[in-house]
Length: 265
Image (cartoon, rainbow, N blue to C red):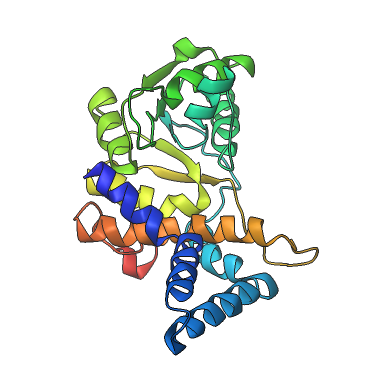
């Protein structure tokens, strides 16, 4: 199921869909439908370049849970989700290589220093289709040690491949008590799906979103179509994930929200 899910998600990304439509259009270019498909792809690409489609797609995800402005006086534990390190590229280069979600690890290290007595968990194996080559935890240890967080302070969960496995495997490792306060660190756009999964298994974590990709004011907006499509793909991955997790019963709501919102009760 993991492999099937990965392949289906890859084919449903906006960039992949545009390529698929373009290829279909070229295949049937002698017919009116084929020419319409090619023209439609051109229009959609132009729309993505001219309009902030990527921001419209990712902003609701990132704003679902508010940014933490004031830290709690006491925290029992902090858990950070994988996804911040390219484990295959790190293995190839033999050095930790972070991606767009690198803020997860820097925030984790900062919070660990702020709460010296808190339990710490890093959860992340490899989300790659090819399993067993390497995993994120291996390289996260090196990176975090380099910025001053001793690896022995952290409980390392290095087998999970999905957000749901992040939650279930970590729960099995630490058995959090119902009255404990845990911070969950992950990208803001990934927080709705993550919170939904953790709530579903009975772990009521406090969201600590990081790694924002959208902004309210669009001055100096990127003119790179590639960067915009990358953000659009990221947003699409989360929207598809929310729908898939709800369909499989891994969350109890399509779009999880803070508990003080009426629809979240």
